[in-house]
Image 1 (tube, rainbow, N blue to C red):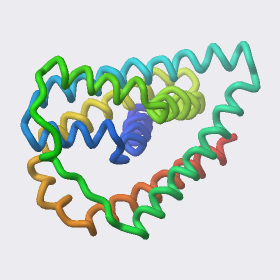
Image 2 (cartoon, rainbow, N blue to C red; image 1 turned 45 degrees about the horizontal axis):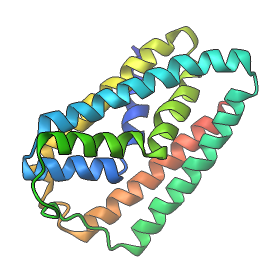
Image 3 (cartoon, one colour; image 1 turned 180 degrees about the horizontal axis):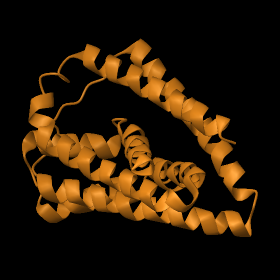
Image 4 (cartoon, rainbow, N blue to C red; image 1 turned 60 degrees about the horizontal axis):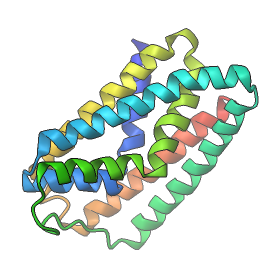
Length: 200
């Protein structure tokens, strides 16, 4: 259970950032357009990537002992920089999201857009394959439970974001909400970077 909870909260913290993929899911939810299909596409994509990261990283580390430390330090550097960018956004402000942007899409177009924003985004690979894969190594034989927790986090997050978007609309109409969110993202990213670095 400890590994499942660790995987859940690690996965959740890594996907909290409002990037292109999450902004698209949020917009679809606000417009109530193909909500289930979009959320399911994102969650299943994450499940595949997390599984690759958790189970393939062990084989890679056995074949190349230096691979895991390199992945860890690379992840630490990425999280520190990502956190700094979020902190800078919180300081500068100006964040916004206009859900009314763009015309209505067909189901196929929405799913294709979602797949592109997921699989063509290098940050997704860093979060799921590299970072989650590296952190899961600390759980040894329980890495499978860690993976289950991380996959659960993706399903919970994307479906909550998609279907709860209507409730978030008034909140994110205010700039201060984006500044608070960016500030929280910065703190979470730095906390994960510290945890990842201290485990090396």
